[in-house]
Image 1 (cartoon, rainbow, N blue to C red):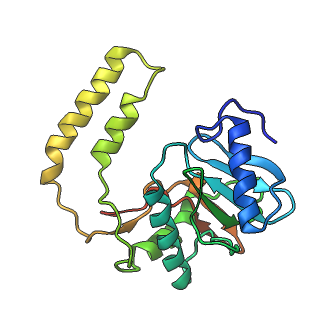
Image 2: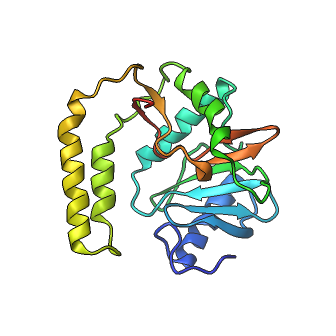
Image 3: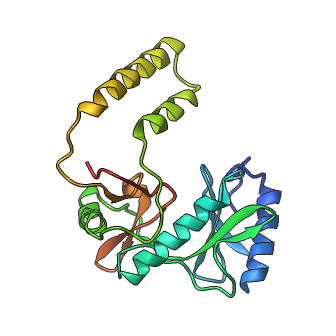
Length: 216
């Protein structure tokens, strides 16, 4: 197991307790190979099963995980290239001690990440799927950027003030922007860490920030 101070906002012993209880309900062995990610959520690869367990970040609303599960199920029904939910003997998302837990089929990866050009086809397909039967939050880039700036601790105050002022100016100009394409479902953070190699192509993953907005 990866040794870290906090994984998805959890101390390791707390995370492991949630993992054990969730796997017991799902009918899976909770022994895990390694932590794949821990900055936002606790994402753990099981040792004896091709399964990735994702424990939503401590304090995250359970409704967020429910929206993600419903959206991904719809994508799977459309044969869309997405990392798939793993079938388990329980409903997803599972709630353990107030924490939302989801299970995903593990897709083994080569050492090199997905290239930017490999994102084009799945993103184009996503933007042309039409309206999903799931209510998505409206994408608010300005609020998201301001929130990120507010959490910065490694830059000098004058630079943070300059960034904040720049965002404010852009926010004032945004209503005047004209978008040529209609709103659609968008992956909130399309980049190589949120895509996986699969077969001869790539699939999108990490739908926590899926939203309704402009693809541009």
